[in-house]
Amino acid sequence: MLGNRKVAALCLSKVHLTTCNELVAALNESLKKINYGLLVLNTCSDLYHKDSVSKGESSVFELLRNDIIDVIIIYEEQLKHEEILNSIIKNAKDDGVPVIIIGNQHDGHVNVTFDYEAGFAEMVRHVITVHKPKKLHYMNGMRNNEFSENRLNVFKSVLDEYDIPFSDDMVSYGDFWSIPAREATIKLIESGNVPDAMICANDSMAIAVCNAFKDYGYNIPEDVIVTGFDGIEDIYYAEPRVSSSMCSYPELAEQIANIIPDVFSGKLTEGSFYAVPKLQLMQSCGCSDEVGFNISKHLNQKGNNLNQYLGEERVLAEISAKIQSCETIEEVSEKLKRSVIFDMCFMLNMECIDKTINPLVSKTNNKFGDSLYVIMDTDYVDNFTPYEFPAKDIVPNLGEMLDRGCAVIFTALSFLDVPLGYACFHYHNYAIQNYYKIPQTVTALNNAIGGFRNMRYQHHLREQIEELYKFDSLTGLYNRGGFAKAYKHLTNNEDCLVTVVLADLDGLKFINDNFGHGEGDVAISTVAAALRHACPPQALCVRFGGDEMLAVIAGDCDETEIRNRLNDFINARNAEYEKPYEISASVGIYASQNAGELDFEELIKISDKLMYEEKQLKKKLREERKNNR
Image (tube, rainbow, N blue to C red; front, side):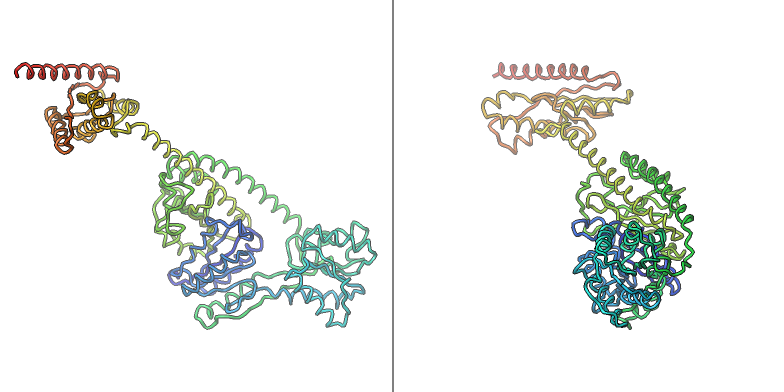
């Protein structure tokens, strides 16, 4: 519940289909009358085949939150995956949220559906009583199919009402589709067993039957009456227009709105409620066509919609390509501002913002995480800046959208089966061209954000690899290549004071020859650690050669303190290790008042000179001690 308004959630797929668009429009208008808002949870594919279901796309149903949603409506005909259907029902039961199912009858639940059997029976009765055919034939769907068998039984039952004998040769099978229906009709014609009335189990077959008869010289309806069922849009474009039976979504929506209060209060927990399809009588059965359907106007609108769709498809493709090359989510948001989107809001998982997370693996405990990142809200597009948003609230300003009377449609965003977040569409009307845009926009966003994440993650991996190659594996100090880049950045400020510290391990050959190279590595690592310990944290430390370590310090520093800290560190390690040899290092320190006067090669020369002086001094001291013994 949001404010004083209760909320119903409609679960379906392919909201962009004409039938789904009509259901959403009718249901939202009916629910507004009883002070309910409508959320639509939509998937762009129909989820019919189990292997086509993705965790990413079906994650939209995780938005069925019991603290916001008061009743769930499932359009089963458009949500055909049994596992998902059962999961929604079970979770709703666990959360105490009532469920209404549009479609097949489910024991123990409230069901609302079209009474297809009653509607089909009415069509058969119309043909028999009004047109009085002498030779009746029925074009059924698939053999051994539940819907086919039901409609065949209705056909038989109505024949029995009028004492018309039934025989198997009165039935052909068109598999609910055009080509098989045409083939079955031609077979019937060539057999010489031509009826004067053909009742078809759906409209697609009825149109094919009409065309087959006309191709063989028969006139519709003068020679053969033909009727369909379901009321698809194509019947208005057929020649002649095909009589059918229409499923009234406003009537279905009124049924749902009428029972919701009792369902919500718990007074109604199971039962079936029906809306009977209405006859739409037109030319193919010989009835006068009073529909008033303007084909020219309708086709012109479809052409305009197609041109608009293709234009927006091109723009979205360009925007998607540009987004994939963005470096930040703020850049992504800016690109979206200049696209063809409106009445939309996009939320991303926080994982999408973190370039260090593998885009092929989701780490969140739920599909969307605890927080989302709003990357675009077209209500505030002029001054919009991306921001973090608590996932529990689903979408910013949801109450305001519902107060405007919008049906708020959610569709998950995903890329390669990984949830990215979701898109929210809140169109101010039910124009079908807007609903066409939903899968179009979602596909573009999936590719854009998926590509954006992949590019950023690849860049992150390259940075990691570069980091690995910057450092010496034994000491953890910069290697020469890594140091050269860092030093170049350091000396951009030519007025900067720079101090160079060189530490050279004494007697490495002696240690290697007498105790092994493993002990030599210990000695090298100790001097490297001592250098890092002695210098400030911001110092650049590099393993310059096999036993030479160098540090560059920007700014003021105490040379004596550095030398003492380095020697104290080595002495402490000697005491700790108790090795049969002593680790020591020669240290040379050089300071320059102007970093710009030093390039890399000059630094090497100065370092060599410093070390030579230090080594010579130590050698002289050792000889003096030896002579004094």
